[in-house]
Length: 309
Image 1 (cartoon, rainbow, N blue to C red):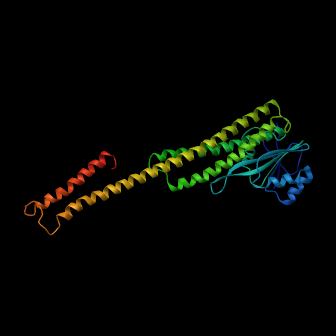
Image 2: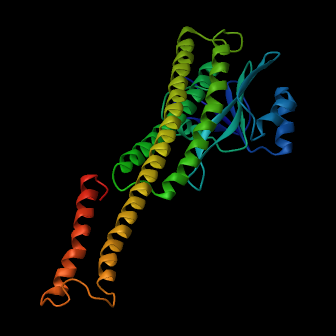
């Protein structure tokens, strides 16, 4: 599907045109073969780069072909099942247009359509940077949500403990964070190349935006690494706590086993068919019971003293 979006500095709303005109943002989502051929023919695009844009495993990079700049990026989005994933998007910067191509729907486009901030498709370099800024903000939002999940799990570690479901979720979160890192790090490399001004004509304000993007991505990278470290620490702490609890349980069961055996030995001795002490006493039964409980009491005292129970 090919959409022609247009908004000038004087416009108040984003227009969706039926035909291409100069200064248009050509937004392409899940294109067919015929649509790809139309784009290649009309804008003289490199076919190989368009094929790469539809490859779900394509990594961010920056290429230049003549007067056209091909910037491969990856944006984060939430799937219908609730998990977070990333998908590739190709941004093509030409002399009179900006083209974005992706197999998946790009959530950032919805923000532009709703007029959440000021922009103009005629300001092509700035439009590209604004698209990248929105994508960077989405990464930051997902990383912040992940941080809250990890903090919640860490606080529960002190109380009732972490469930097996939460431990399983950590595996998914780690995959998401590693995916973010694999996207953000090459993205920053592309942004640094962009600062040279050889790929996009940048004004002073545009250079400030690129520097802000670099800083924001660096913070997201550090946030991802910190979350991965926190997950590792929580998993190690949970393992240590579980091991300690298991040891204490074994110690307790051992003490209980010994505690039950000691009175049984005493009672077994008094159950033999020979003459024994207190057999003629009126309170002989209770004397035997007390004699059997004395070592049990001593054992209980020692266990409490050593904090076994």
